[in-house]
Image (cartoon, rainbow, N blue to C red; front, top):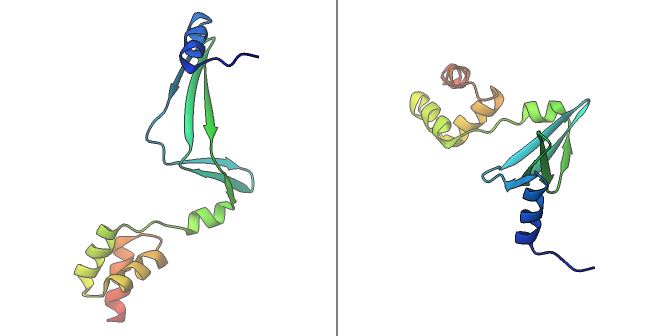
Length: 117
């Protein structure tokens, strides 16, 4: 069977009323399921429009995580850590640990560090 080049494929899809495009800038896809989540970092996303419906094709390696693990893992920005450090006089490491223990709550982290101090 002869292989089609992508341009021919796109032209044929357009004749059939189908549109296809890449979705740039996606850094993570999470599929929430009962009892677990599927996380796909750096996926390739293709959007296809067929008969008035939109189909999202996600390509990438998935990992499983429990919803509790996703809730516990809080990303701490450097700006937040620097703010807590500046307000409390604590080191950046201590500020990050306080933010992690308070799940990213700035006010609680500041109170935690000032109460220790």
